[in-house]
Length: 123
Image 1 (cartoon, rainbow, N blue to C red):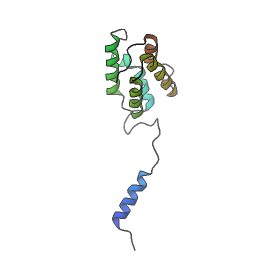
Image 2: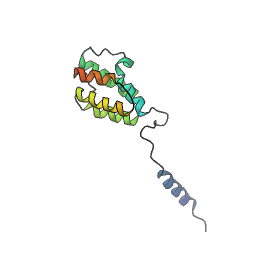
Image 3: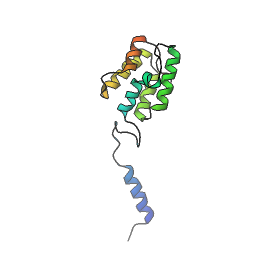
Image 4: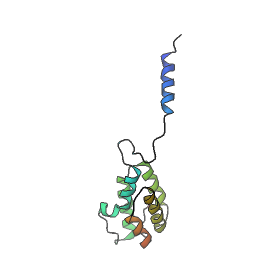
């Protein structure tokens, strides 16, 4: 006796859901990798044409807006969210640690945040 076609469809759906999880640094389908996202965050002032010496609150808001618009990697978005609830100096240290993990030798935003203690990302 042959299995019912619906049974085969359900079995196929179930088995395909059990596939391997994607790699953490793999890009989202058609998207950016985590290292690319962190690079964009570290270089936000230059890429967005921001003056880090301007009003710290405005700069922080403009950094946040630019990153929200350009960082599309899910892990990068999670990092931005976690950074946004910390003070500027702590954001700098956390961003620097993530940059090192992803292979970046330098992170301009981390330098600025740790030096000034102002202009951090906002939620």
